[in-house]
Image (cartoon, rainbow, N blue to C red; front, side, top):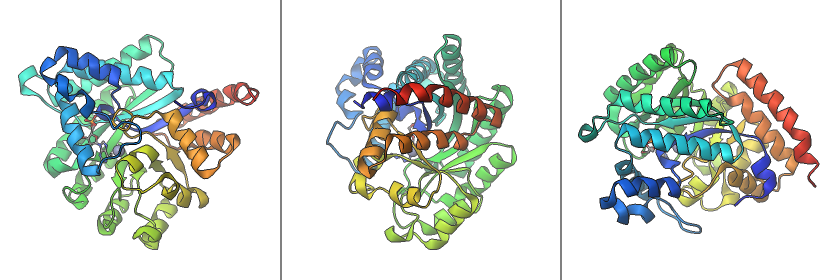
Length: 347
Ligand SMILES: CNc1ncnc2c1ncn2[C@@H]1O[C@H](COP(=O)(O)O)[C@@H](O)[C@H]1O
Ligand SMILES: [Zn+2]
């Protein structure tokens, strides 16, 4: 549990996968309806001090996906996840999720997205204090044809969701498939006005793929762990990211627990933060990695010795990286400034 300062700090969450963000309370709720999966419960979260390989994490997602197989499941999960982020002091979130179909329950990719959006709408109507936007995710293991279908679906909801659907994500096991196959669908999405948040260089030795994906260019980068030369990336990749000033979504617990990074102090936050490059602290999968955004900010502060003012600035700067329009950014900045005095008179 994070200290009160980090909980009270108003925060923006820009990298959260819906099915990776399910809390153990919600998992229990889902398992009650699916007793045959009851022995899977402890398979959905990596406990404190434990680690897995990234490959093992993707096995965990297969188990979690068995728990969310109907529109009702997706609706329940979205509502709970949104409320949990709000309770943690997150004021603006961009959730992302891969539309899935399930013949046995009649769930289609379209109804999946509708269920997510309905849950978001209900949270708003209930007065939950958080602005929620949504990115449709492309899972790289499903290939470019499905990716193009996802872009089409995103386009439909982009037009009809009153600004809630703002873009596309490229994710999934980075060791599967080739990123260059997704350039065309991603570019098509971009031409439609959808913003792009792409997982990039989450594992080593993907310089060629990273270079191609950066040429689009994306609006934000997920992880970017192996972009810089010190870890086998290249100066050219760094220069491209700097040239376009593409913000990085950084997820400490995710990278350490899935072992793409050996320890917190080795995290590439250090490299990019020292360059003055936009860095956004995120959770990735708060359920799987047993974390929340407050804790991720606290880890950032304690690992890199950042003052409360520096942490405040980090949170404030993240507002510049959201996909919602400028007017939303101004509103959030006003909100942050209103909350600031209360936060700094506590000690
Ligand atoms: C740990 N690092 C990661 N790297 C890449 N992709 C990840 C990921 N963590 C999650 N996902 C992606 O998000 C899906 C689960 O949420 P949704 O079913 O879409 O809501 C995973 O199946 C994977 O495609
Ligand atoms: Zn991710």
